[in-house]
Length: 288
Image (cartoon, rainbow, N blue to C red; front, side, top):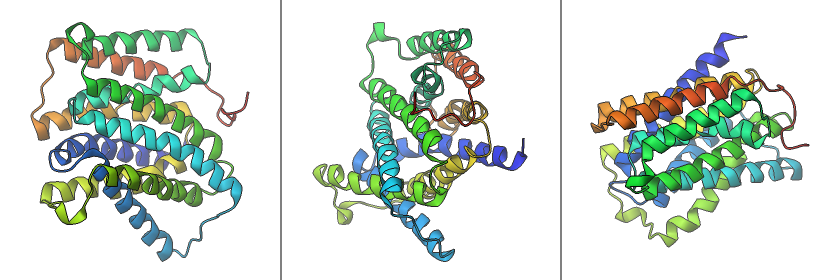
């Protein structure tokens, strides 16, 4: 196993973890879809500049556009649900619930073995302790759970399509498409650039989430799935919620009570068990 892709994935995991507290702070100044539109617009521009610098032309054939459109649909729903959810739940809760996509991927692929069922049991128990529905489920937790489902479907789509097109075209078209789709909800939400105060906090949040997570980290994910087995990719990503919780404590001063930490630990355990489940490396998950 080559170490460079794995080190790149570790950096990606840290960047994605940093987006949770960064987005939480940004949503105090701008509405969700306005922030998402700016984030993806900035990421798309950054990618466009890099591709232009390398004189990399994008493939625009029907097959590439179709694959990018399918993956983009899941990506849009995932980020929309997650970002809206962050307005109504904590950054640490959002990170741990989002991490359930690692368990959902083999579930949707119908890889039903003892390890998967153990992972699901741990994750569901942890989720229950984390959001404690008996005390009232937070609206943001439900949005975030919907986002985790969409992210799982996106990973499945990437696993299937990354071998059928070049990485640059498949990735860049997704950013372009999601940015275009986000323009509508942002305008409907009341997006007006001149009305936004671009404070240092908001600018840093856009740089971290737009350039770091949306442009750099997204390309690394797609590229790495050609070099690192899917279960190893998921295992590395499993550290994201723990990093996000630490950063939320450091940056936002968020605290989890005893039940919350126990639930978080169970979710992380479920994610780790689910991530190590065996799976064929080059099987097309969208084919029966």
